[in-house]
Image (cartoon, rainbow, N blue to C red; front, side, top):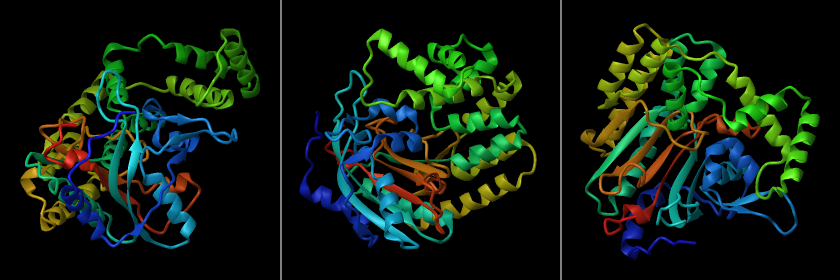
Length: 379
């Protein structure tokens, strides 16, 4: 397993300082995390980045810790406290992209907050904390990139699309590749179904119990011994969902063009959001509320010391973790590139509900990778 090179102790102390000043409870998160739960909450696209572990007691499948958000939320729910803020500092583990020399084990520092108050101001506080931590590493080429999952949903709703199509687009937003494919299919027409889609369509016509038996027979005939993945029943259920989605209405070329124009909007937040409103071309309570919240957010960022010139809003900006449902952000270094953010975070108010819990507060957090924040690092 490739490790990240150590950084000077004084740099690590400086990067940690903004988080320690938040007076949060220390979180001692387990290294092993439940695999199925993580994939359900964060999305299947994360699977290829996980180190899957088969436990000796043949219990539920697990993976090495890939982030701290789920652990913080679980700890908070178990505490019974109405609100709380949690600080963590520890190593996470992710499979590096093929052909990459990136580390697979590296330290991560952050805070997760479940607190009442104005969401826009809490978003700004978290983004400013991430900015200060990233700056503490000594880099002078940083930019704060921000997006808004909720705003994308408001734009989708403003276009009055068929409900299945609207839901499909919202789900695709966390993966730019999926969203581009959805927009492209409207221009080029439906592409040939993949093997998974064909199999899903075939199994969807059977009762789930019978479809599960068929899939298990296919595995047996092929000599496949599933390890570290979903059960046959889970796969059949998901294939059925995909088959149903494949029958949903598609975007027309005109609608795809509108969304393509939306995704190209980027720049100073208030200017970019004005362009979004012009594109939609009609009044919307959700869009109006979103613009007002962004005005408060930008003012709060400036008051916290984040230069206005460093803040950029990108309508196309999404994060791979599928549980974000509000404002998202990354601190990027020009020297490292967009695919290696120094710090990141966002809002995930709906995540507690997916665990069957109801919180009287919002949920937002941020993290920094000290190895990337250090100006002497190239990874």
